[in-house]
Length: 288
DNA sequence: CACTTGACCTGTCCGC
DNA sequence: TGCGGACAGGTCAAGT
Image (cartoon, rainbow, N blue to C red; front, top):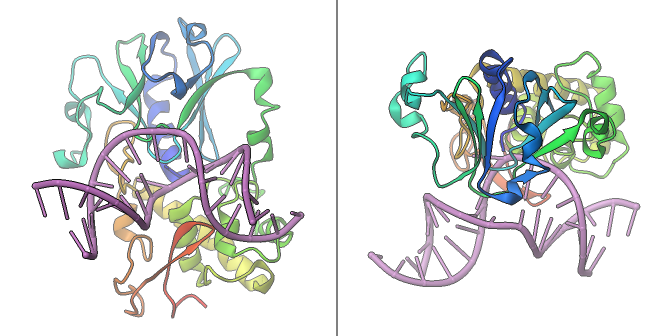
């Protein structure tokens, strides 16, 4: 899925466009994609939009919030009333880099808003979900409660990173980065890229990391996520922002999805291995 | 316990 | 061109 930069990009885009609007109508095309009674949403106004890790939250009147998790292939696409998607895009990427008009065969849920725009929740693989939660239950949600620090918040320091990871001395560092209870929002792309940035081999065990490694890893995480935000996120297969545009971070990636291609620093072919069941890319020379 | 594999789904790409 | 298998931005559950 969409990892932190992709969900954050969607959050920022939606915030500019739908705060204050009301939800007029909900159409659930795939029941498994939507948990809760969708009738509760009708007439509720959108108050605030937030992100925690890879979860997107939409606070509504009526003391309820809508939570979205896009998992591997989810998309949230906002489309205006009359204009086609490509007409609404400002800044003009080529047409081939935009989604076609909605709905399509992956559309699972459709929201109609008070300005007659529509939000399409698309999800090819159906792993993603939307759920309605009472605001009081949000504070008790186990997944949200256990999430580690947000990389862009002050609480995330090299020391905290070390403290959270050191409990698992024998874990591969790459696998540890994917654990959302240690740090929030990192997925497979940014785990690989952050480790390259920090010059750490993904097969290193946590116990092998020095304080200097933790410091570089902390910086590598933040720098990598920042760069991706600046490039609009990563579009490998499914990711588009709320306006249907791709993100271009992967054009700048050093290792992810670059198996056998030359390292951009030392020209050594990039390696691909499997760690914790996930494809893992790294430069065997640059990452010690 | 710690660690790995499978399940959830659909689609695409690569090798024979 | 067809077909099978591997693989894909995530997370949880079951198995070893």
